[in-house]
Length: 151
Image (cartoon, rainbow, N blue to C red; front, side, top):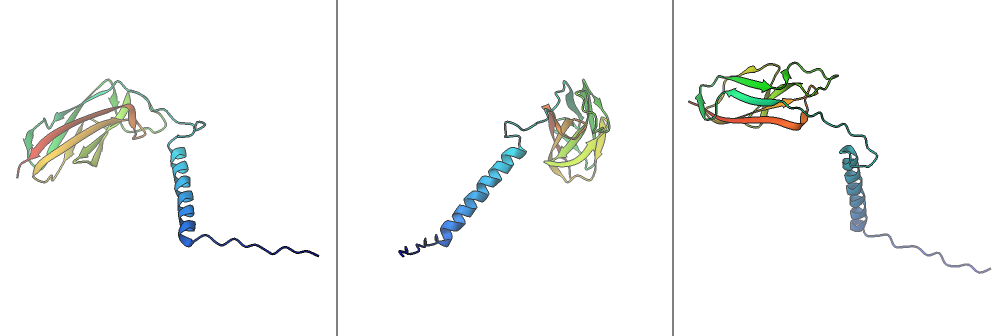
């Protein structure tokens, strides 16, 4: 009876095995990211509604010098500002996200709000008219004003 000797493959070095596992993890992560972002051809994506709304910051005005408490007033044309109703997305209804120096500080369900206790210096006030689900419209509606709080 003839028997052939068993042949063993030498295991790959640990570094090569780690690189292979890391590469697989990276590919899996990329695939999951693409799927989450609607990258697949069969994925269902929800289109964002468009709006004809226009948003202005009436106060503070550009380069305004204020005290630490700042009344903010908006003007919205072509849409209604109201509390969010997540079950109904319409192109002419939403609310205003108010950002100060890059940080969301208020959600306004009307055309007025107040910022209180601001530090002295130059500040950036950004307002965005958003849909009822708090997400931006397909055609974003954003306005920005720079103003200064005096010491």
